[in-house]
Length: 260
Image (cartoon, rainbow, N blue to C red; front, side, top):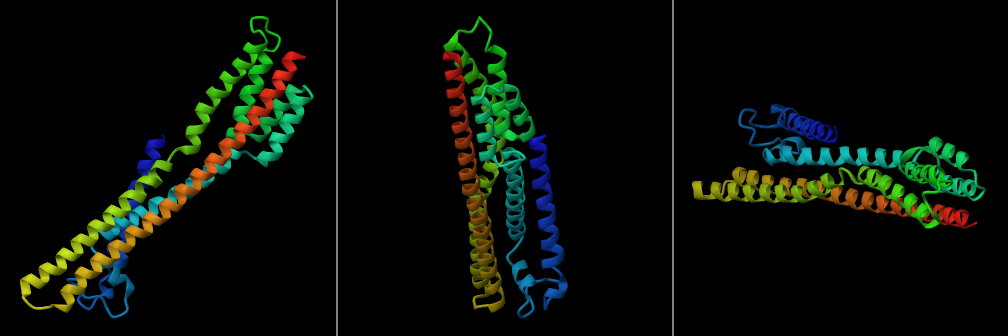
């Protein structure tokens, strides 16, 4: 399902980007030569960008992909936090566990939902199941709870980090595609000079436009992706650290309860 969603996003981004490139940027009304579309009208930004070549459409699709996954990651991470304030939720659960009210703590986890609640719920539920089980001596109970926590964390952490690799990949590829477009543009410019033997302002401007607009598109896509990747990585790390603190607190409560 995850791979299908990613494939659909990428396919739609390519479709939208190239549709815009050929129908909006490449509209004949944007050019003095509607048939060849080599000479954009003076001051017409759409036609000028179009002269950057087909790689402009690919770079636009990278920007669309980056923006799409920024929204997707924002939604997913906010959903992982649960319905209420995570700090208040942790405080409420630890207070209930300190009082020995395991059922209310489980109810609070069910009410909160999200990744943090799932991890804490797994710990509380497992402790409740083995608390009075003679097969588990004191220290083994804590180890069993920790095992349940680790299993739950192994399920939840990938959900927090998924699709971040797409943002980092777009950041790398956008720069390379932009560089490719820059190189092709300069090749076109010098080929025009070599073929004519004289400086053709139109052909030279086409090549330079292709070079500059691909450079700009690659940098825009890379900047958006890098900033988003670093932002979400920091956010996920902070969220996981908050979960670890909550786990430490409830583990200490369980240890005290076992020894008492």
